[in-house]
Length: 275
Image 1 (cartoon, rainbow, N blue to C red):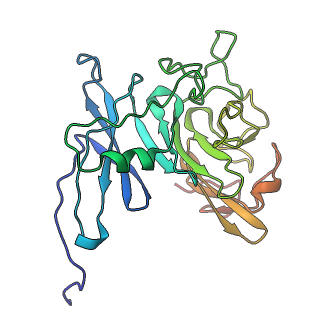
Image 2: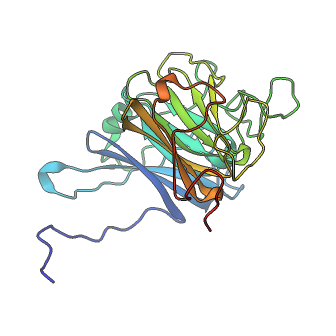
């Protein structure tokens, strides 16, 4: 019943639709908006945007919105964003079936903070920096495969919803919801990182995507992944949304494809489903 000791303010939301995620580095905030706005061609509907804000610590909430990212590849359904330790912005574009990487996003954002009408000069994909899950900046096919025939593999994605970055070795963990799995990609900070996943959780190999509610090493509509300290090193927590549970992998650095998680949160066991 006591008044809050903290200053309060109402700030207008820049999003036409839903705010889906936020990432911060050095008081620069990136806000993902999953909305239904016209794409860069001025005709096609259904694009998402990312807004950038600078929070000036000397004046409290001095928020200055910038023009959203506009690249030659539109954003079709942003659901997750992360800032890596080298200040690159990573974007899970769910409806584009891809992960985009914006080089040194924080430095570029600071260069134009407060400047009206400026589009951040960042291109998420080119010959040296293609997205994960697609061969180029304009392709958005689910389960892309170099053969030209879409199929489940270590290279394609089908609605990536969330991502997390290893704080030491910079591997990227991606929830691939329609394939009922989590993929791990090595050193995402490299100049030309490997676009093939090195590890899969939730499936026995890279070519399967079967949903299974009741097996330990199986997932149904996996929606989130987080990395943090655990009893045996770095732990991964995976939100297995369709099975109403969270799966814990206590030694993620030593995990191999096909192993079971160490613990389940929610149901009383791996073979129970709590609705």
